[in-house]
Image 1 (cartoon, rainbow, N blue to C red):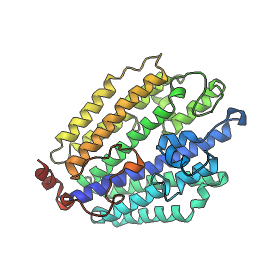
Image 2: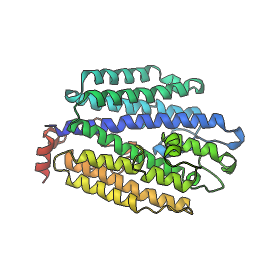
Image 3: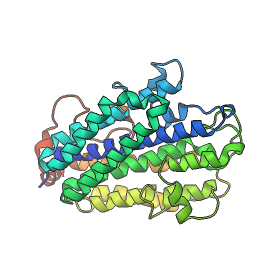
Length: 355
């Protein structure tokens, strides 16, 4: 039987690890985009801030989205709770809080990942060493995920890890689609990726960057085939049932994991509502950026609803107002001191208490 405080720690560990990996991938892909496109394209760094929801915090401390400042803020800034180092630190803290269910070999991988990232953080800032550093973060996160998949019992503890991973992954896909709406639906004119110029001369490179930022480039062409179009890519990233980073796949996987938990009815209901929203989405060939934003807003609210159902049902606390906002996290290690009275109860007993 799993204590609810362990369940919550494992859930947030899954989210933080996925967030660190996703942020590293976005920075790597955007750096490659800067190198691929000419200076006349005017590639900016503000889209990365928009995707991570950190624009306001960054601009409150910096004069503008300078490359080095943005990269330092998103990788190593200890005051930014969504930075890679902060995410890895919070993941480590949450896994430490639940070490009783974590194999020693996994804990060693966690410590090695965090220790290396802290020691070599300066390598993330400089463009010459940045891509290698980001690749190391991604690879070491994969190593940890594989270690946990291969050595942990696939029980409630592992299920909460996967729930956190799937919801964070779905949320990141939605955020990328929201920010890159103008590119994804093939609209000419200014683009959040390439700045004030028309995206037409750089459409192929820009499209590749958007898909690579979600590890979807090769699988899109394998699954869909033919050329890239905004509506086809949207349907793939939102509704594909086989690609593990599509929103529908993540929601289905979250529902499957929730179904293995005691009394999962509220969470399953939230997952079912999100799945219905995804199935009902009509992505036409003439979809506009505004229509796309309306679509992704609906799906993002559904994802938040799943998070809130999990938090209320299993953690004995209401969900955050925004499940994806690094400043709105309500995980036990990032919150203020003081333990929730239900957090010492087994998951099943906590559910009975709240019934």
